[in-house]
Image 1 (cartoon, rainbow, N blue to C red):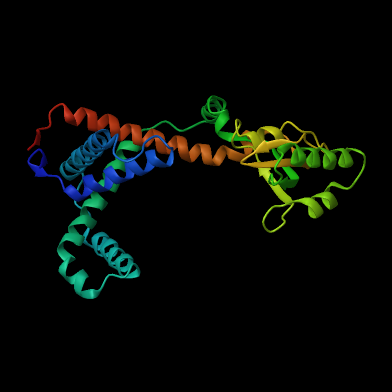
Image 2: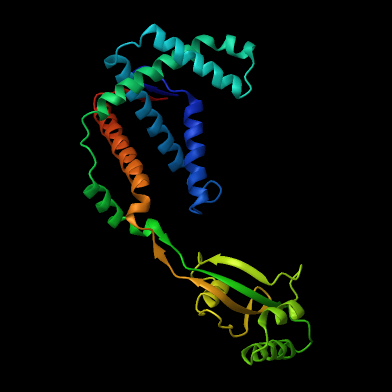
Length: 281
């Protein structure tokens, strides 16, 4: 059981935060199964503690919202619940708690608006400095449109399959139409030969490493990958680029503003912790 200044934390909030932290790490392939569960649970508890401290501060320092404001916000809350399938019986049973949550949310909104009011206006210089420090975020990888010919070794002597692919490459280099060769000789299920546009996402992947070492109209050497022999020809190439500042400035402003506001809340929560009574049973 977790209590903050005598208020018991909802275990469901901790479980939700725990699941979110773990899912985010799994998406980044940083964790498997349960190896970092203790770390994620600690992060979840700390997040819930900060949230409760901020809500308590808002309760003490933000005036109660006007009845009309509460009525309008409460109606919006009920409408949203109904849109998500909640029955009227459920809403009647939860009416008082939903109303309390609505008032608490209004108080928090007013409280945080006051905290953020004194933040200095972001300038274009601020945004450009952030852009330069995070240019890798806006990198667009190279891409290529390629034709593909693949054959799976079938002969008793692997050299026979390799020699057949060498002959197909020689014919392509001598002027034969690669698209026709691929359609006639590829062994791919479905006989697809046009790979369309491929972005370079895996630098050390053998297929992409070969593909993106080629220039336009160049035919690759025969190479072996995933139990098959391959030939690729590059039809078109788009070089790597970085999105210009002007295209991403609005998104940068939103992200930097959001980060600044979050930091204000984190700093306040850290201050509130110095006098808070936090109990764990």
